[in-house]
Length: 373
Image (cartoon, rainbow, N blue to C red; front, side):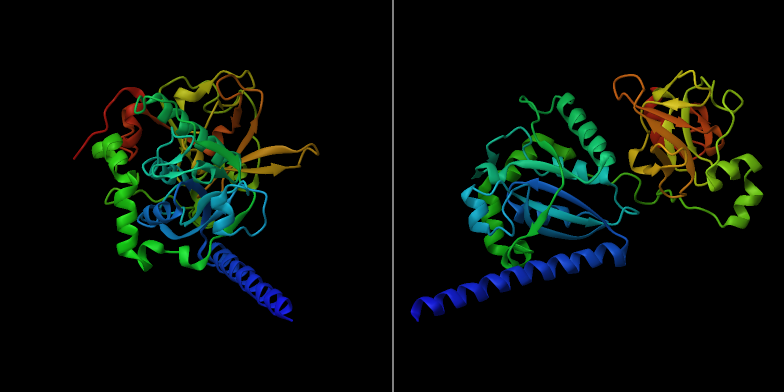
């Protein structure tokens, strides 16, 4: 009878834990659908600290502490800490992409961790405290790899940056008492953090650059949007409308930019959002403007296109949802990609007029400093 009672209570406790996880998963999923938020997953050692740091960012709606990357279903804190589940302490960041980009999150993440440490983070040792970026798609993977490479080449660290980049599979919310720990237990949290060595390392490593400023926000923020269709029909040429709004394709070698050689950037003809740079343009011989990478990967949306029966990867702009073209895996190094884009989807901004047209942030691409007020 005693054993039966113990088993019964153990079953009830397990059910409550699972129910709590399900409730948190359900509530966070509603954040995505109801608030038009996106979700990013990072592992930065102690999730109390990474949760607290990410929640300070403008545009971040909520951060959930939990576990990712392992093989055990609904693991407990004790199981993960023991190192037998394969999970790392992680956080899921629910953010508004209209206010903060995925690249902004990456920059904020590097300022929270020691990405050269393969044995844990600061005072917390073991595999469950390793750093990791869990990506949802190819765009996030490209941004994460590019960001990690730039950090590696910056000379900021004496050792190589070894933070892993893995495909996201599953996230399990941690127990309730771990959520918002820095708010629920401020004194204990401050004592732990002050003695962990985290802030001392970050201050020494980053100096004045420690507190990341979200690019594009503030008094000079530029909004990208799609005008009403009636306005588009007046503003765009017949071909521009057909290509961007009706997924058309212009003729090769008979379009505005296939042979454009001047320095500058290419923006969406509808919204003005920056898309590609002349620095990444190459002669593909196809008769359309071709680029090895986007200027702003977060402004690019990729979708599978079956119009020619065989699947292709269509490229669209994020804010205007303009049809731009397609991306193929037959481009030159270093990316091996060919973004084949319709000129009719683009507007070219020469480097000489970048500041006048509101794109001063890209002057540095062409060896010119951004003008300050």
